[in-house]
Length: 67
Image 1 (cartoon, helix red, strand yellow):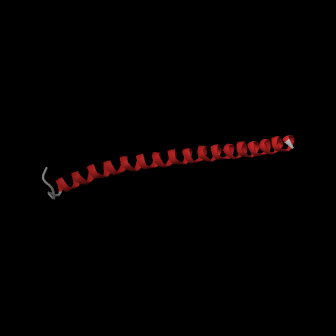
Image 2 (cartoon, rainbow, N blue to C red; image 1 turned 180 degrees about the vertical axis):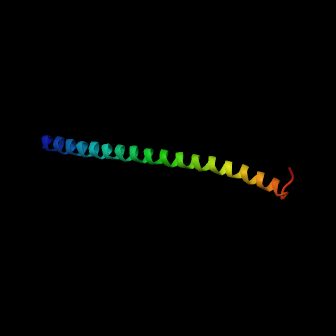
Image 3 (cartoon, helix red, strand yellow; image 1 turned 90 degrees about the vertical axis):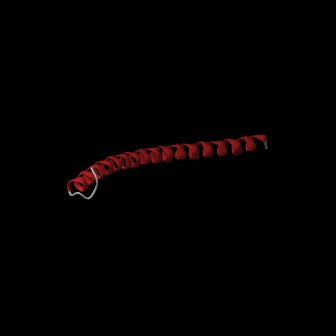
């Protein structure tokens, strides 16, 4: 009976190890995707900043805003 319990415990530990390994791979993928999204957001923020600056210059040139 003890051998059966040890085999059952070993089987469960192997299954857990496999599941943890899959979770690690999934987490690595999620981190890579999140990094890509963060980079895109940073790029968009830079573009929006430049757009705001250009719009302000246009407003000043058209006398729509005080200099």
